[in-house]
Length: 284
Image 1 (cartoon, rainbow, N blue to C red):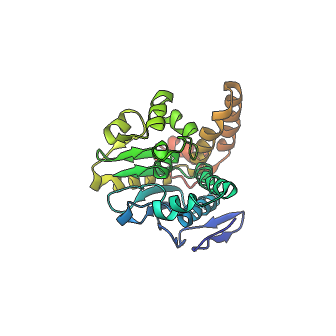
Image 2 (image 1 turned 90 degrees about the vertical axis):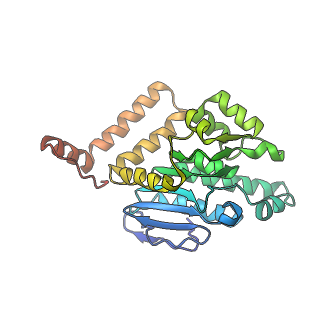
Image 3 (image 1 turned 135 degrees about the horizontal axis):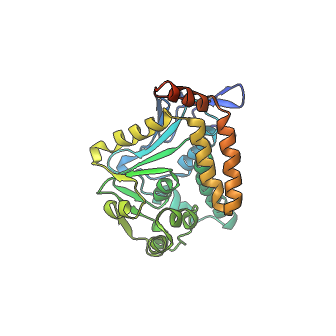
């Protein structure tokens, strides 16, 4: 595993501490077990670069081992989420690469989505303004999406002569909004308004722009205060069961639930219920 500018503190038991991680290509802070990751190039609507892609990939890989981060919020600085790959820093150089170089890049961007889906922490995307291209994929790969009425989400790939099947879009988007709606967005590259995105199930809820980040952090804090080991198991099952038949899924869930029944959090919940108290989960 490679760590970029902010080296993670390694702990016993294949664990890591990331609360003090100093990001090099975006903002990253942790409070109350909730990490807020802010794409921070507001003057360009927060586009991604080769370096930010790589650092995001490595950070999400490291988060799989971080026991001091319980939930994650992804947002953008200013009034936009992310405009996708930077036209000058990424798109231009891509036109000069050979096929092996192009494949190395597309595999790297796919590895970012794999890392987002593989990390155990629930991820809440706070989406305002422009959410386009790879930015739309970042939101799509998150577990929960909160938006605003003025947000514009677009999977722009066909607008620049590329297939709509970028970074897992053809697998992820139909599962969120349905096959027909996903096909429309991926073929046309058109923008989806905030109201439409909520109606189609892309956004879980809409908020006023000035209240969006607080709402996302409050949602994430509620998850961070809950049974985080069980949340991680839930996320793993949501991911793994896509490729399972019903019988196989039921068996996988039986095993997952038996593991969770052996946790201290399960016993805390039982004793709190008997005592008519609210359980205090510790994630173990």
